[in-house]
Length: 321
Image 1 (cartoon, rainbow, N blue to C red):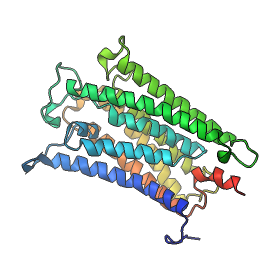
Image 2: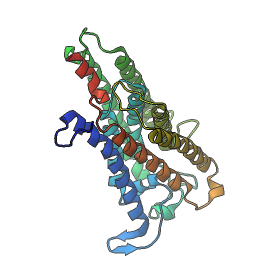
Image 3: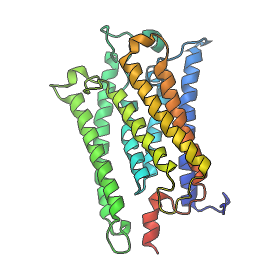
Image 4: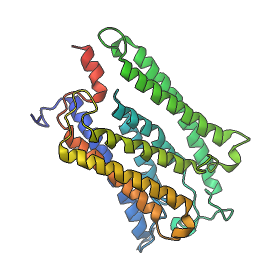
């Protein structure tokens, strides 16, 4: 039975709006990129047609604040949807990679698409003035990851976060441990690549075998996320979850399949960039991935609109019964 918006408890409203916020974040980011593609100058205001090489290249345009802010907001929202099931564990892992997409910029090779910013060499690069900002962001990221992991560990050991028997739920503990390990390994890896004297010379293109840290984070983010609709296509994945309808399961299958194809296309675009020339294949691929991401959250929002127990609240609810 549907729960009227005015009568819905705060926890239910929070999870409704968190899911919807992810749809709006994608809309905001795509709108910013679209505007940046048709506005060749903001002062004075001049219109034209100058599409970016990729959405990630918005980092080098006046749309940088929206690009970085959107990814940071998405990371927080994904982490806030934490639970103890496989699906929410994957979302937590996505939240680990999202900030790196914003902090470590993509390389530039087509100066036309990013305001004539030059590369010191003929190969892909990030301009020298942006390297310091990227390293500063990596340092902050690494420290924040450690603080968050320690904070979560302390919270989980507190008596109020345990179940009725005084022992934390094993599934939730395994999920938190896995995500914490991945977060710490990721933070340590990018910190070493950014600050190790033996490795930082090629930063941020020193992540073997992909090269670009930004591209690796992007592939990992969407690659991990692609598994989420696959899980939902099979039926409920959380206790108390409203089962997806046959149509919703079909949509989840299509989202997962298209995401996998799209990621393969992005890898091909990276490996054979000379073949595609000035065709914005990466821009198209990233836009498709973001649209599929938004569609998933739109569908899941309405599937779980009336779920009485959101995943991150199940443990607490159980402890009070």
